[in-house]
Amino acid sequence: MSWVSKTLNSTLGRKLLMALTGLFLILFLVVHLAGNLQLIIPDGGKSFNIYAETMASNPLIRIVSILNFGFILLHAVYAVILTKHNKKSRPIGYAVSKASENSSWSSRSMGILGTLILIFILVHLRGFWYELKFGEVPIATYDGVSYKDSFAIVSAAYQNIFYVIFYVVSMGILAFHLSHGFASAFQTLGINHKKYTPFIKKLGLAFAIIVPALFALIPIVMFIQGS
View 1 (spheres, rainbow, N blue to C red):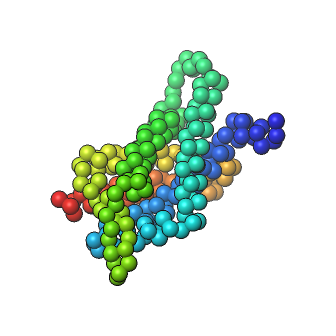
View 2 (view 1 turned 30 degrees about the horizontal axis):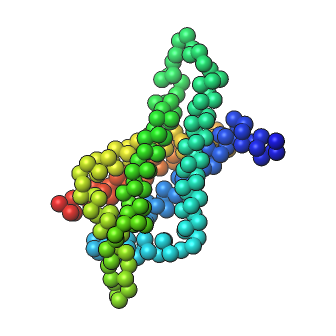
View 3 (view 1 turned 30 degrees about the vertical axis):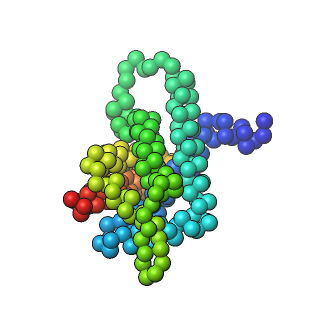
C-alpha cells in the first residue's frame, strides 16, 4: 500500500481531508454569496443574469464547480467514516456522561447537521442547477445581448413560502455546523496557539452568523418583493 493510501485511510489523514475540503467549501460559500446577493439588486435581474452567464461560460469556473461537487461528496463520505470509526473506538459509553460540559451542542451534532445540509444541497441543486441545465429557461435581452433568465427561475422558486422557510431553516442549520467546523478545521491543520486561536474562534463565530444570515436574507427579500 502506497503512502498516499495509508495516509487517506488513517484517522489523521481523514481528518486532514475533512479540514481541507471544509475550508474549500467555506471559501466557496463566500464566492457563492457574493454572486447571489446580486439577486436583490433592484434592476429586474439584469446583474444576476449577466453574472450567471459569465460564470457558466468560464472554463475555470466549470472546473471549480466540478471540484466543489467532488469536495462536498468527499467531505460527506469522510464524515460518515470518521463517525463510524469513533463509535467503534468507544462502543461502550462512559458511565457518567458530561458531554454538555465538555463540548458544544454543535460539535456533538456535526453528523446530523451535516446530513441535513446535504439534503438541502440536493434539494437546492434539483430546484436550480437542474432546471437551469435541463429545464426550459426564459431568455432576457440586455443591450441587444441575450442571456438565460436565471433570475426568473430563482424568483419563481422564492415565491413559494414553504421553500423560503425550508431555505431559511437550512441556513440556520448551516450556521450551527459552521460555528464548530470553522475553528475545528484550523485546529486539525495544526493552526492552534493561545495567541491566535481565540481570534480564529471569534472569526469563525462571526462567519457562522453573518454568511448564513445573508444567504437567508435573499429569499426573504425576494418573497416580499414578489408579494
